[in-house]
Length: 227
Image (cartoon, rainbow, N blue to C red; front, side, top):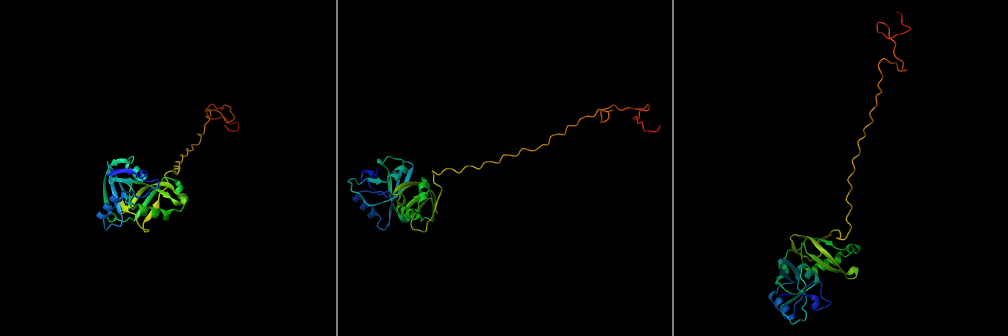
């Protein structure tokens, strides 16, 4: 199919789903009569993206697939008619998510309580894959769009995000300042006492500085000694 940006058919296209012409939409849904939701597996080059099928759009081409901008970005294309392989899958083809970890790019996300809103948004997206980046408008921020990196999905790399029983966690925002690295303590200088300076005393002198007088036999002279 040809991949086109959704801006070619509507200025207010659905941010979460892809679209096809009414004729192609009926064909796809007839081929998957029991599917509650239908997911497009889009492959172009080495890139693969999963995106749910939304409502049809008025268009004459039955071989065109119109995509939201986050899908265009993840595929690394311009969305101007690139040829890709598209396989349509039922949501039953994917395991239900038990845990999802997201990393917002903008710390503004942490200023509002958007968990419930985000649960609804992820349910609309349907399939999440670890390593992808999603762009979701946040109603609590006036529709401001925030990108989220899908860091972890359990129990598999590709999961179906549906319901409120999924454990949802958030890492620190990508634009948050990095925590300062702890400074390594400087080693204390070893205290070495000054060496005591020994003052040599010249042999043969008393502490008063006078030379020692000696007798004829070599003994120190003592005026009080009895000979």
